[in-house]
Structure formats: structure tokens, C-alpha cells
Image (cartoon, rainbow, N blue to C red; front, side, top):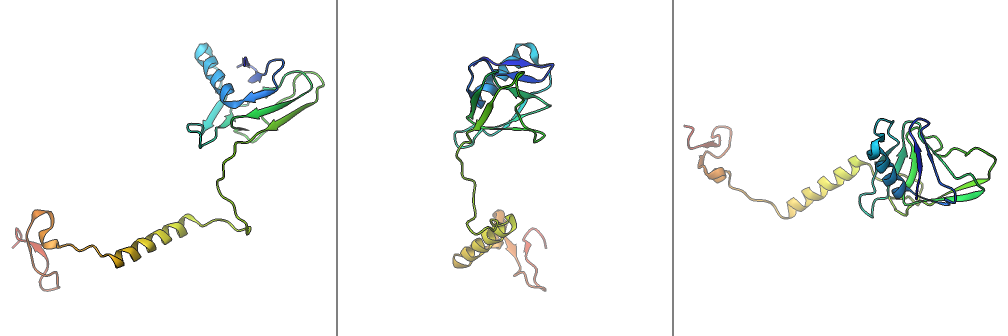
Length: 172
């Protein structure tokens, strides 16, 4: 799709007939526009994700940039990612004229976690504590035996008690 990027007004205008906005395509076309000699304008987008099929693209409009849908009555479907702004404002502005425009944001399906009881999930601290407890329990079942008197190829003498400290044979 051919978009019109205006670095002065910070607007991305969608062409006539555009009823689908592919966020991956939009971001790619903006990068091409920047490389075509427009790097002096304020950055329009920042991203998170999108590197693998498992992580959806989160595309953030930055620095006051907005998207202007086509000047016609229509429903615009936004696909292939999640579109937000860096200041939590609406990413779209109305075109000049009086049109009925609906925006249908099709969010990618990814389950991060949910609760059926209304409570929150475990904290980082409780997960860490449970992990340490499980490792300690496993170590009790299968202890790791070592002979410190032969560690690092050195011979040691002493038994480690208060009056007979464990020390290298190099130390009298």
C-alpha cells in the first residue's frame, strides 16, 4: 500500500480505497521513507516484538504522529499487530470532511496468563522461593559429595575443625 508520510504535520495518510491497515507493512514503508532522505523528521514509530511469529508486533506512534484514514465512509481493519501511541492518546485523527469511519482493531491471539478466581498470579519472589525449595529438596535426595582435600589438584591437610583448620599442603 502507498502511504503519504508528512514529517512536518506528523501525519500518515492512508490512500483512497484503504480499508485494511497492515501494521507490519506500515512500519516497513515508514522505514523506507526515512531511508529515502527523511531521517531529519521526528521518529514516527517504536516497536516491541514482531521478531518471531510467537510475539506480536506492538507498534507505537511516537512524537505526536497520527494516522489519517481515507476520506470516505468505511470500516478500517487494523491487522498484524497492536497499535498504540507513546502518550496513550488515540492513534487516528479524522480526515477533512464529515465521514463515518469505524476502526476495527484485530488483536493478534496470544495468551499471556489469566485468573479464573480474580486473584493475581504468583509473584517473582514466590516463584524464586519455590524454585530454591525444589532444588534444595532434590539436593537432599541426591547429595553432591566432594573431597575438598583434593580440590583444584592441591592436597590439603587438617579436618576443618577449630583446632585443625583445613589448609593446603603448601601452607605449613
